[in-house]
Structure formats: C-alpha cells, structure tokens
Length: 106
Image 1 (tube, helix red, strand yellow):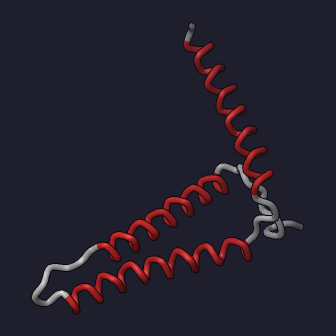
Image 2 (tube, rainbow, N blue to C red):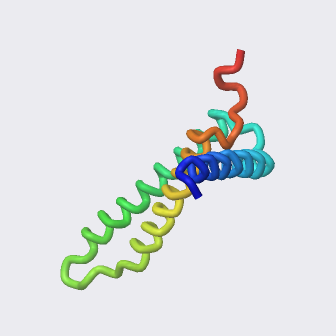
Image 3 (spheres, helix red, strand yellow):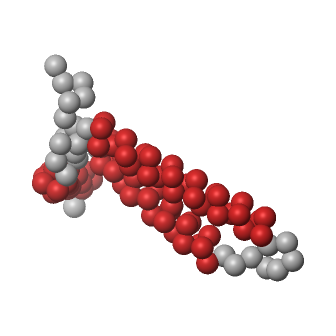
C-alpha cells in the first residue's frame, strides 16, 4: 500500500468511527443539555469530597493503630470511576458524537 492509500484508509476509518459513535451515543443519550450535565459535576464533586473526608477522618482516628484503608479504597474507586466516566462524556461532546440541545441554538 502506498502512503496515499494508507492516509485514505485512515480517513475513511476515522469517518466510520465518527458515524458509529454519533449514531450509537445519540441513540442512548437523548436531549443532552446543561441541565443534565450539572448533576454529573455535582456528583463527582461530592464523591471527591467523600474521598478526601474519609482520608481526613482516618488521620484523626489512626493515632496508635494502623489505618484501615478499606473504606478509603472504596471511596477512591468510586471517585476514580466517576472521573473516568465524566472524561469519556467530555470526549464524546468534544468530538461531536453527542447532540447538544438548547445551548447556542438560535
């Protein structure tokens, strides 16, 4: 394959990826707007606060004994999972896979 053929193949693959993602995501997520995104930001912030709060609580209680990190680990896993999901959503929006309604429409 020539370099031009490779470039053409990659362009076609990129177009296919865009079309598949746009079709699939828009079928699953309807009416995406700022009001639907705000609760996600709130949820992630609350999860972050719970994670840090758990750390602070552990530090205050673990004077003589070693800390039990099970709850901290659970909070971290929850927080990190929410961050990853939110990042995936942001990428989908940035790449134009999701239609945004009621924002910037004339």
